[in-house]
Structure formats: C-alpha cells, structure tokens
Length: 253
Image 1 (cartoon, one colour):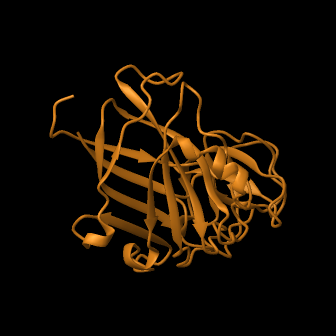
Image 2 (image 1 turned 135 degrees about the horizontal axis):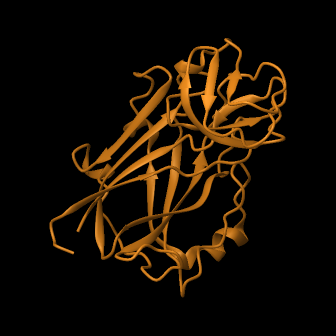
C-alpha cells in the first residue's frame, strides 16, 4: 500500500427487525456489520452519515455510540443482540476484545438537524472542531473467511442513545403475494422518502412479520416498483428501509 493514499468505504448496516418501532437509550442500533477496505493500518479521517427521518419528516437526531471491531483468530465479534433490543452486560463483555475503536457521535454537533426536511446528513471531520476530530487508526483481519484478496475485514456496530424511529408512514394497500409493483398509501408520498436503489422491507404496525424485499427500480408518490418481491406483504404493512443509515468512511493509508 502506497502511503498517503485514500479510500472511501460506503457501509449500510441492515436493520432487519423492529425498524418501525421507537428505540430506547442503550438499545442496539444495529449489530456488528462487516465491510472491507484495502489491507494495512489506516486512519479514519472523515465520517459522513445520511439518515432518514420518521414518517417523511425530520427526526432521528440522537446521539450514537459507534464501535469498530475486528475478528480474532478468524472469529467474528459476538453479536450484541437484535436491533432495537437492550444491550446486555454479558453481550458487551463478550465483544470487548474485538473492539479496536470507539467514537461518540454527538447529534447536536454533527447533524444538519432538518435542513433537508425528510432526512439528515451528519458530518464529522477534523475541520469541525478539535473535540469532534475523527483520528482513529484501524487495522482489521485480512485472513477472515471470505475476505477479498488484498483487503481486510472491519466490523462496525452501534448503540442508540435516543428514540430513533425508522418508520415511514408508507402503507401497503391490500395484501400482495405476487408482482413487483406495490400500491402504497399517500399518507406519506413514497418519493418523498425513498429513492431508486433503496432496499425495502415490509413490517406490521407493531413490528411483527418483517419481510425483506428487493431494491427499488422506480417509484411515484403512490407506487413502488422493486426488482424482487421476496415474500408476501400484508394489507397496511409499513414499507421501510432495510438499511436506513448510510456511512461514508474516508481512510488514509
């Protein structure tokens, strides 16, 4: 690896359960999620986040405890638990030797806080202020099973420090068992929340019966077309993001 080079990693952790239910402080925001970057020790120099609000409006401006981890002897970090469930002492302890770095994400300092109406963009670079500078050095496992040759596997997980809620208010009109176009309610316009390329899920209003679907290929205010149905959708089940949070991580080698 030539020193002084840069690499951008885009990471979208899946939240496959309870995404339309409000979190509590110290709930798992998302469990350990693996991603790859080129091999070698590197410095995280920039951290940008795009995060939707709730029901098409500004929300989700809450602090986050962000963890970076590595596998040990080819073994991934132990699960922290399902998203939107309370972190337990034994699960956090079982991951402590895997943790390489911790970063407190201060929502008040980082988030644009609603300037983009339906979603927020968070920014954390050395240029904001010295307290919020990233400056984290990471070196993962190039030998973790399945890692691409020339790359290393890094793990990321997060704990919520507030009432995050990734509900959209977009409801499926009528049970659906076939076809790729969903008719959805106009309580919240689908094209005010989603974009082409977003992977979606459907879920009951109480968080039950989650079904993972494909990615959006086109959409209007009241219709969403996807590339794979993946499973039946109940009447009035909510259509939500499978991976609502996007991290863009800048590394320097």
